[in-house]
Length: 442
Image 1 (cartoon, one colour):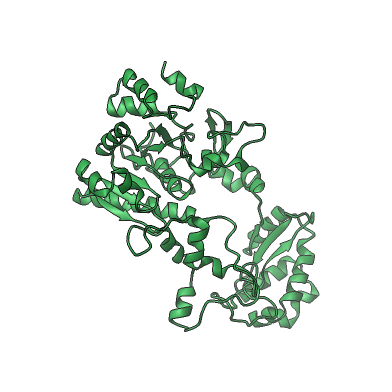
Image 2: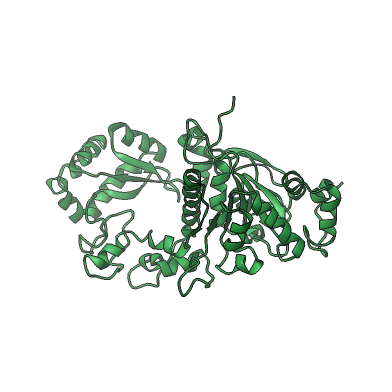
């Protein structure tokens, strides 16, 4: 018998778009909630227009981008024009039978449509409304519009990233979207818990820019405690905690670890690297033993942390002469076997196709997508023994489940649904229907 899912029976109306909002509802769907994704073909989700993630040989179109397909698994797809009287009426009826409404527009959009939180409360007194605006729904700038990279700049993250004397670099991926999505899911879960205890719904006002502020680490303490501004001295800590030629305390972690770097491994290709870190003198001695106690490594100047920090260049050169003789996965096995922290640097191909641990945890299951075919998607990174979370439904084609939602949830007849396609409620009047939609209307 299949185990129950934690959010089975919870219905979520998903007005979200791009990444942060859909990422939140993706996880709610993995926990078993029924997610109804609401869209309109004339105002496509940006991810549906992303041509860079369309598989080779696939015709461009709103159902082809792989990024949308991975971000929006576990959802039903409904197209409806909220800006029409009939569409608004039907949306209000859906709100009245739902548990959660979630969106990530700027603060004025839902009120402009006529479904602000005050209206939702009248329709469903215990409704949970989670808004994920870039600036939230309060404050002098609440009406500002933003996207991940611009919110990242205001939050302070962009300034902290980059090389000294160079322009702020920002981050390669919009991590605020993914982090904001996880915060959004957490907001829904805590609000559901509160409603279960009290019977009361609520409006949860999440600001994604503020979420970014929480990711700036100890920069806050640097200002409030140390009385100094954030700065980028030397190369940013990452592969090394301290770089040659920079003060030993020039970052938020301090000079705590050496060796701590990425080292070339056998093969010498662009992806042949392994990261090794020794957090104590004892761990360093273990690595020295593993390397066969070469003469250079037994020198007294490497015997303690301060010496290894002072001679990092020579230290890393010696280690890399050894790592270059061993393939990165074999090197990882050797180090881990004796208790030295080491991990191969992995590309996307490595992670998806070669990593045995990710395979064992089912991180990349295959789903049959109606257009893209059988494809791997990202699963959930956690395991529940009693209420398992899972990726169980491919992302919807645009409007794929409109008839199903309208019939099963609101009791509309097939004639009513056909009329909605004719009058522009469920599809733009001047836009041809996709074949799968025509099939549902027969």
